[in-house]
Image 1 (tube, helix red, strand yellow):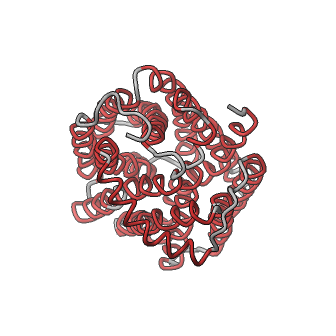
Image 2 (cartoon, rainbow, N blue to C red):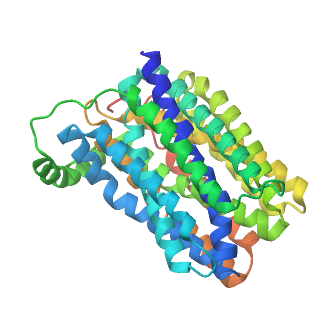
Length: 405
């Protein structure tokens, strides 16, 4: 393994994680409460998450195939990164009542962020052998959570009463962190593999191969079963990430400073979770790791539902942090063992298809239930179902599943 390349890969996670926390924690509450207002804010914020994930789900396998066939994975990662950064800067134009502008920019920003991850994830099988992919994946997430912690700290300072730069400064800081770390990562990631195929031909082949890849995925028993389980349980994880800030602010009265502090601590817990799960993922297998974490998640959601006060919600948030870091790392390592060599971006495109399609229904249902029933506590119970079903489906994946099976 090339440590220099691995560190560069991890640094991309350090940079884009600024968006991963600023988007739901600050832009989400800003959009739902300030731009839209009332319970309708929950519904519209749910629509932002659902539509952006739908766009990623529909495009990921196609663009992943183009990247593989045309040898432009690195350039695609650069394109999506620049698009995401530009849109975040555009948040500065969203003010009170700008419902549709905020909606459009939110969808585009999250689409670019999630789309870039398709190409980022596809590097894992190239830079680490199967025996170390769990630990390398965990290291990437650990870097990411450190980046999240930094972004939250910067946001807290910028929004403090002492400085009070305004929320626009947070968008600029997020874009700068993502841009600088992304540039460093791209300078160290492997060069694109030369291809004699032009972009139009690759696009045509990529479109045709998308359906071929889908058939190939369906033929691979363990891969098919894992992706079905991932499709379900990832919906629960994304729904929690997407709505937790709104839940804490509106149901428990968290102030902006308290919310930032809680998420800073949550990210510390996520670093611990991603590191702790790395070695067990390699030694006991990613199947064991993911199933154990799904049980963990059921207890986390029940604790959040029953929480009577802020201290109890704090505890649930710390437990959630451990679970987020662990399940994302273990899931990515699991997928990397099942991907055939030479088709990483293409198959990770389907990984994104399942993960992002599975993130459409949860936010939509949560936002709708919270709006119609005027109860986020009732909506949060829905998430338990996703984890339970995912656990049952994952039990059908063979424990000894390995690369290319």
